[in-house]
Image (cartoon, rainbow, N blue to C red; front, top):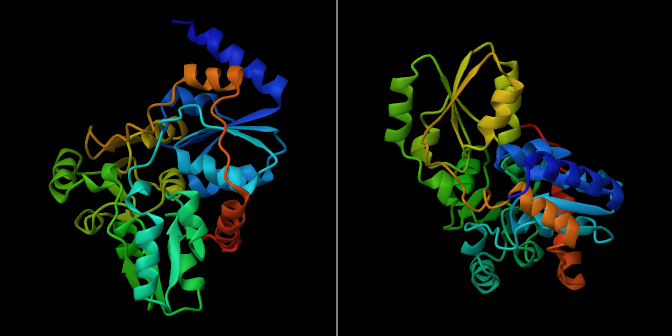
Length: 306
């Protein structure tokens, strides 16, 4: 095994040689977050891709995120360090099933959570993230919305709009496994802590939350809040950044098992391999890219409030 300092030094040298930028999702391993130029949520990282002057984008996340980068910036080389880093929720919706649903509700707009493939984005009217889902839905002229693929986020959004939401029967396994009894136990162990939950959680979990927030909003809230202790209802990788940015505060996870194994596949070694071997290049066929880009562009144009 190579020395970690040598790996980091080599990564930094290759970044300069290749004019590369490293993006890491908030759920990545701590050491991967620390080597990244930008760490954030899906929306924030998508915006970094658009604004970056880099020739090479190393996307430390899962496949749909790298696809989004390739859709938005086809002139850049987009690398996904681990080719098997997929998203189980994204795989819960397919084009044929979505087309059938669209036929059932011909007057409905299709709002596609970015946690989905380029093919699904191309079949959608607009994309959203957990940070802007409510704003996106309320920005539409249509009175009906097919929301794919996360039923928990879709059901949450339904509480903040007058539109009829047809929520797809998909979910994030990591968030969906959290149950009310896990939260109650965590609250009993940390009675002075505020509970901040991600909207991908079940309704029973969100009902116990002091605040329901996207990952970026959780980071902002924790920094501004006068509270000193927080229970965090999302993937446990976010706690690294929370603790790093708020060393005087305490953060607890709901469950030690709230881990997305696909997000944790990426290591410093795989980031180095990606740069050394220019692997794995993510591309999207042009006809699919153009359709998907329309949905992503519409999302990026919506004002963010969360």
